[in-house]
Length: 526
Ligand code: HEM
Image (tube, rainbow, N blue to C red; front, side, top):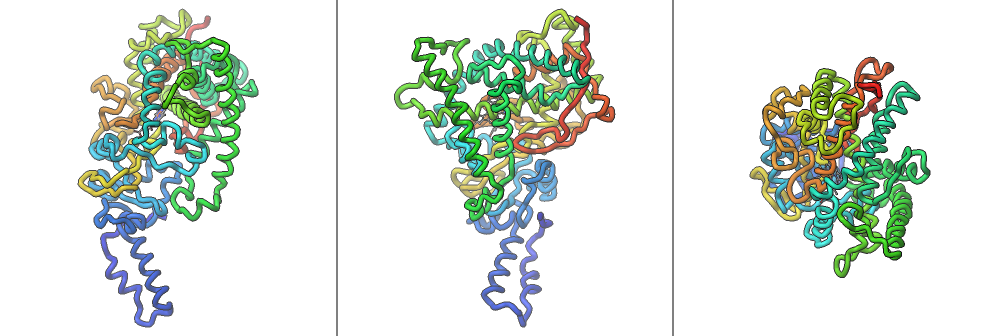
């Protein structure tokens, strides 16, 4: 329950609550009053129990919005209710967890760019999925985290590697076009989410593991298991777990999160362990593929020597995180883009005109990676989708104050969880003209970077923990969206009531609550 904002009426409340002839024993009455006062403090009980005497403005009580499928919207309303300074920085409590949330670019920058917020709070599920040893949760002060970022930048996400990964993106994109055509031939409509998810998973498996799944992923036993593991991991990390905020509950595991994590980790260890073993055997037989174009990230990790050498369980954590982080985010972003294309035929037609001018009309050839630089309007469409439907509206994984620090003039004590509501910033009418209108042209009028330098639109975060996969994600999304739009005309499926349901559901990422099903008609018959 979220209580409404109060402004220090505690004294009068005390008088009301202290009748002269209290039926409660004095100790119980005093404890009860103390609990009420804690509850009513601005920012709620977790702030009242902290050293901080003047927390940023925020609702009293315990906020349960984080468990809502539209948490980003509820929190945006709460921040606005706390006034201008609340939008800049709002304090609130979730159980015993003390949080601040920024909904303005200035304080968002202070949080994301500051080394004081270089760590992340590690959820119980993340710890049990071994992610505290992977890049996303490892403490920023550790040489392990710095080493991982360096390695990933050199061997996975650097400009040359992203360009080199076109040899995976292009054929996987073409296979996706065939999947679309096959679904149309079989069912007369395309369940796009499934097609996009399978393509995205194939892509990450090829880039990180050097593993190819040429046929329908779901049809091979290994592919089906992989899909199941990614979905389960997503669900576990996306589930709001009260045990993260009420320490006593941790031991009870009422939501069964630990049990499920334990089961999943066993499967992941077998699956990823087998791939590592295959690489080891190949290397032992003298075939080492760790060059710019043929090596993969497993080879890179296996090639580490001396102090950098990793244990198998660390390698499994790092590799698994890549599959996990890289698959759904891209598929979800693409599903939103395509939903917008179905909803706005005029914008779709404009993108297709751009494609025809650059690539040539329809069946001639499929869009290639080298074409993307000459498709600025399609890039604007992707940006506008990132603004309206950021896959991580609360920037997915929060930050943790390592030491006391000031944000927006407020003291934020060490141990406070800090979040940025990027969705609220990207929908703020004081920042964006007509924020509710889907208008890619706004980025033709003003070029805004989405890579983290401009906090009006930073869907990949910013600062030292900015998403390392952002260039790979954008390269993949641009190419595949261009391929889909070049090859097909997109329209709503007949059963969808002629429309697209844009309702949202926030799990780990902001998904479409009703998966997109549409019709794809070849633009030029081959
Ligand atoms: C549309 C696609 C994607 C979006 C919107 C996205 C968004 C994000 C965001 C918001 C963060 C937190 C940044 C911060 O705290 O400042 C993040 C972190 C991360 N992302 Fe992405 N991401 C995407 C794709 C990818 C891909 C393709 C990969 C890898 C294959 C990836 C790997 C990671 C990792 C490892 C981290 C943790 C970095 C760290 O804590 O040091 N992401 N991402």
